[in-house]
Length: 329
Image 1 (cartoon, rainbow, N blue to C red):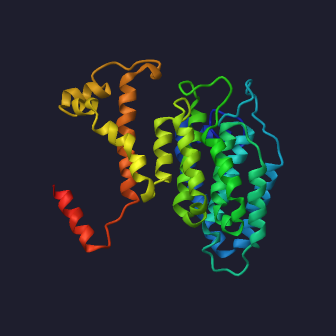
Image 2 (image 1 turned 90 degrees about the horizontal axis):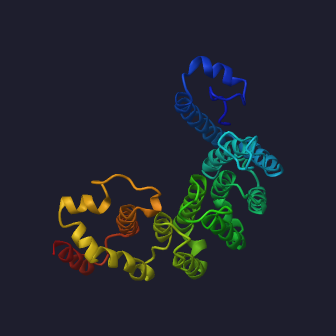
Image 3 (image 1 turned 120 degrees about the vertical axis):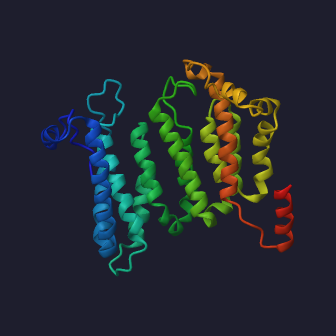
């Protein structure tokens, strides 16, 4: 499961064979994606047949990874790269765990692991502190995979949310909203997506603390230097409940009916100019006003789509007939 063996590297005996089979790392990467997918499927099928043994391996591997320090390899800045030993280990272990837990609770076999083992593993993962964005992303994947055990320990939910939101606002020293590295942006968006997952799949657990969740997201959203437009859109999707739709959609409504948008959508030429298709790219991207325009359009569209995905046709015939008239209008 470890992503090793690239032709350009020497971190595995298989690198020598890869240099014979593949012309470049890109070719090997295509192969490895298929290879890992096949092995993940084997793990899922094995879990259905013998969930106890599958979980035992996943538990032992992850506990072993948790007991180790962060080894970034030869990186001078002490940051993990895609070839760092710690990242490779975390990435493989999280993939293994996700494959096992995706089938653990649907298996009808009798030798399922005791529930307290999964709860203990969740607590161990939550107690681990990761300051590297690549390792933190894998840690979030493990937390996400262990979500089913939250129903056995609902009192752990605040700790889980705290861990996730610490990743939502994760940043490294010296970085600002405009200068965040790709790894930092990825882990922040990953954390936002996990908030959506837990809100969507574990509504009963989230509902009692929804007010606190909503307040916290609103507070960090007020800081203009904290969340990007994409991060705001993702977090909005987690909060789409009818009582808050009006308040959440107000910024989108204000943008959509603004004079800037009216002029931008007036003609093809104006729209192209508004999003910057008719001019050369501007560097740095933070100085690109057209990039800001594009992000505003994307935010509006993604928010509206998120609302539509969480909406359904009214059960009341009178309401639905009124909605039909409104749509025709």
